[in-house]
Figure 1 (cartoon, rainbow, N blue to C red):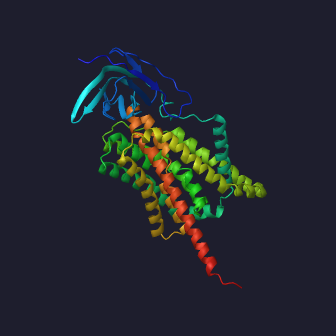
Figure 2 (cartoon, one colour):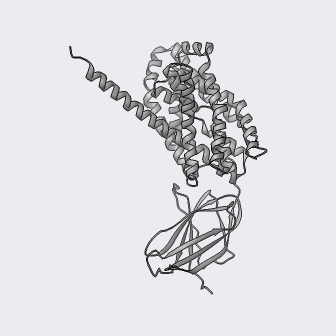
Figure 3 (cartoon, rainbow, N blue to C red):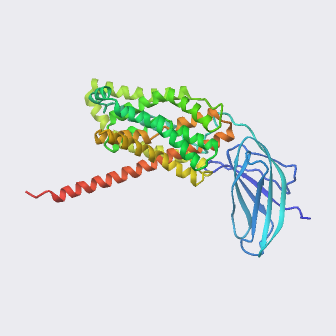
Length: 434
């Protein structure tokens, strides 16, 4: 009925790769097999058909099994030629793909060309490269960033005040408020909101696990920049990371059963302990430097602010690069929940601290620690708990929360600096001249 189409399928690498390789198929037959190795693939379809009217032709792409192959979008690459670009999300398994070229003549649609039953195979991926984003970073740059992080943590150790530690030891109310918010209130809010928005079970579990994560390393960075209590922020981060060894498996067990995901009971103990040591070791070195060589500690304290700002922007950039592949499949409900989770953490933490009549710097610190979550611990739990297709779906949550919380904190920092500058200008204008 329909003549054979002259079609070329070019399998391109995902955006961000340095080299572009492709496979070509001329006069493709039904027995052809395509093998995809990446989580995101781009297919270019070219036809010799000429449009009778501009933009009259369009491409229809159907996958027999959406759990193996999902069509993200189909775009026409040029007005002059009948070329289309298909973006696909892939998961391990096998399925068939059908591609149809249609032409709309007024209200009538006419099938021009068709390729049926293109077999697609997606091999299993190992756990190590399961969630690697399509990006390559020079190892020397990574070593530089790692050195900057360790130096920055060491400098924070120089800013620890033992008087604050003694006060918190006697009156641990800020630490208790932060722990209650992080491990009880936030997971329940994540579960409730995911049910209200009707998210799939895997995504709902991803948001719950993100909400039950301890405070992230960015907490004491923003505590410094927003004039909170840096010593308290470091103590709260270490305390919540230690409590996560107990509370994360408890919440994983509880909410996985509420969501109907029985058997989800994994927690990355080694990664949690590694994070705790990664925080404590350089900070402890900074404390020793402060007491053994105070003159060197002064120099380290001077680099805290510029180094913190640099690392903050690097962290947000890397989070966006790594999470971009997941965000392409995120809908408005996911983005809304990603914005709400850190905002609720900030609001709950600040409100509870304010009601408890704690000092303003302490209120800021509790709010920051409650809203800045270590989302990548949730990603580790998702890796251990799901098959690849489900894990990919659930991983949208931690990446979305990480990016939204970073952007919200930048916005708060910008508002705070503008307000502070405005206050200083007003005070200067009101100061009488002598």
